[in-house]
Image 1 (cartoon, rainbow, N blue to C red):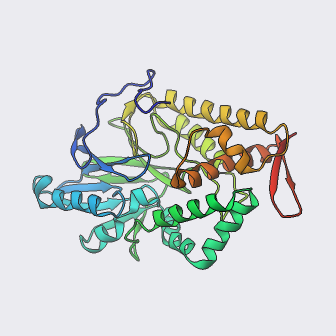
Image 2: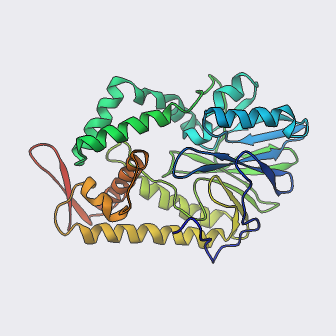
Image 3: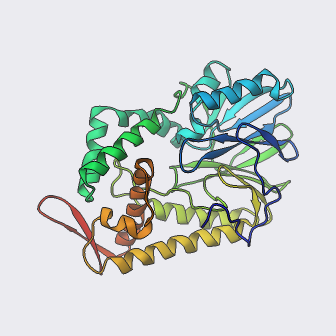
Length: 347
């Protein structure tokens, strides 16, 4: 879908976002801040929720100078003199927890996060050491990636994980099914997998406000990838299961505020479209695998456009997520050659 085209079956109350580094009120007592990212997906939405004498922060942006400068300007008076009260992180990806160490350390904010995402964030830097890089290399080689592409994907991937200030030694767990009170509102805690292990989302049922994180985005599907440390995982099944659960548990008339793209109405319509999108991608892979293909050979089937090194790593993981999903359901059969390279053919 073109980034310049809004889905016609969704309603966008504010079709023009704030400029990077600026914010506006998106719902009563909720500020929408847009921060820039140095990737093809060039922004992340941050929400500040009225928390009595200050603002609770939902996610932080990455740990680069531009993002930190925005926060320093806000703290110096951009928020009308009101303080930040606590930090709530939806998941461990760097565009969401990048400045967590700074906010919890220098600013003294208490961290709230699901246990699984906290653990994943603490473990993420292990992938930067020599052993972690060897795991990445073997993973890519096994699925047919050539040497030049491996070097590019590994270089950008490890750089991405450096865009954080770490996590503190203590936090308060967010638990699915429980409620967190922020200011005068009660928010139900919902979680879902696929894009991240146990991403947190918040629902204020009384006011029909849904902070959707990366799980349901208006224009694109979140990246759903297989990672080198879990080569046989099935994240697409987890993601589709999560979408079904959200559709059953979250009312259709909520105002969805995602971490990327625009806030919108039409949650169930968008969930249905995302499920159809992944079904079509699976069908495209089945059609392509009339002969044995590696994941690298399938990649241009789903991503025919030119990808930069950063995008290749995510696209590769997403292709394999669809392949694993199909293989687990008997639609594809793996074949391993003498060099250990895996190919897949439709059954």
